[in-house]
Image (cartoon, rainbow, N blue to C red):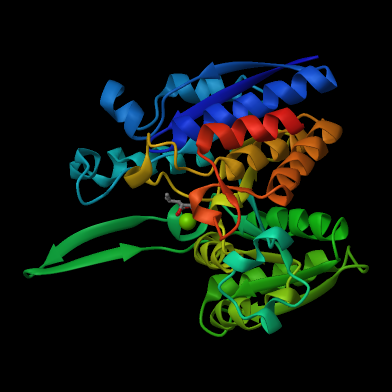
Length: 360
Ligand code: IPM
Ligand code: MG
């Protein structure tokens, strides 16, 4: 069986981590009898350098014609890169927002999981870690502040900027359903995060989520204000199963959740639409400071590739095999620099990819 995969290596460490993910996917394909046909395209800074824009219509068309998209990372150092001299709508990040919108990728899944092998890297005290934690941030990805009207004006010599946060009930309902569906396959708890003590959009969010919850009597629902959630994530992360939230809150909380696992280089993500189609990328950024030095941890991208097999291609056994191979290399003591601790064997990007591919 063959599948069409659009590959976006992107900027910074993107190309080198994607190369390792492809290596692992091919090893899985050989073992489990499927073939992936890859088409590499440009996005972000790499696209700006060639086409002057971070995302072309050709790339959108190519992505739409494929079964899934595998992405590395995009963007550069805002202080030094010429990409950030461009107007905001032409910068690398604008390409990412545009592809999310064009492909209708409204459901962003960001697992935050503490590997028992990596407990030493977790910044929390061991009495807080306890038996570990395992949560899924479900972030709405195509609405809210990111896509509302915005403008910067000047009145009587005073500069003024405006962003708007809008949600309609259909946008809330579809992400809420996804959240409950996923909770059903996990520990059956949804924490819906909002700022309903201040924002109208949050009050609507809460009402719609409560409505959706009626169809899931087996799933526990709790509401939590976003400031409290930020605090609870470091006070007691074990309490969370699925965190369901809007775009901006999800952006912030998912970085926080990844930090408490102590290993942002390990965390994958999936962005899905109404069908099986999805875009898969690591949760971390493009780390331009270590690009091209064989230092980057490819595991987040490799685990994102596993999510792609599971969610978009229904190749669950191959996905399981990749996840097990990642666990195995960790158990055997191999570490890239970001997750290194005393007594382990330090390896580079390429060797980490090869070790995992051999164990699939
Ligand atoms: C993320 C990133 C993006 C976002 C940036 C690069 C626009 O932080 O995927 O979390 O804010 O969504
Ligand atoms: Mg972010």
